[in-house]
Length: 376
Image 1: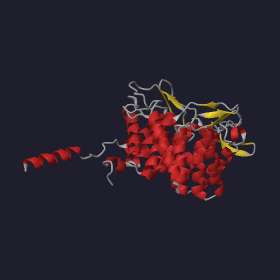
Image 2: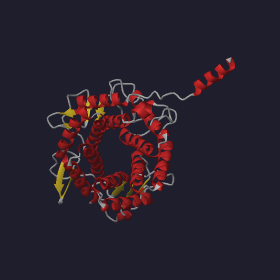
Image 3: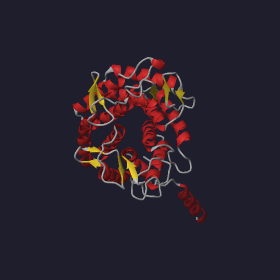
């Protein structure tokens, strides 16, 4: 009998235990509260670009990129805790109309609010399409879907046949076609197709998907930054470009049920993990504005193939940000693999909102993360 007790004790020792993951809900709450305290501009209903704590409160609103990430953070929070964050999200998406400008017969979001002449980036507007569609899925307001469709019309006006196709980076600088002005467009087009069942959105998504894979995908599955109209490819790799192509493949799989897309999403995710995730710390070694999108893309893969590994990689990366990437004054640094041991003298909306978005995305998987791998 004593021998059997020993065997049973050994078995108990090797049973998987629940993952002691962080409380992403609480972390998301705190991150958004700090953003509102440090960066909110109540007279405009907008957020500031940055805060220098050695100076007076900021007055200048954020560039559109950071504003869009903040909208995405509020949307993720509203999905989990609608009573608190739905009103903030709805007020903010309406306030962002201040960035809208019509020029050349087309409306689009400018880089700054209340512009008198256009300075519009196609990638900024592509991110706004994704944010607006997420808002629409929560509010079901027709005006939010209409905003997304109008914004997509502006983005698609940036496509021509130079370099074989693709969308430019900037409206007035037709010299560069970036992965970041094409990959999120593919995601947005498929999402618009899901919302409207308009076949043209899916056809255009397929065309841009083919262009991205032919022009900017490396042999390892990851994506280069872009191509100049001279034909020179800029081979720098940022995690968000590959992340959005992971998401594009996930969405194509959801729409078509063709498993080649899911296999491709997994292949890119594996390459991205090897390239950007540090095995010793689990941190994603890239800028916050890029890394949070890779974190989310890994979650998207998990939602489809149910391989717990992807969720754990994403959670570990976000935990590093909270535990090591958070400075003593509670704010988050620019790089997701850096430990910040001194208070940050300056913060940006882009960096803070990137962390908040990641925490709220993972808060949706509280039960899974608290369970042992393989548990229901």
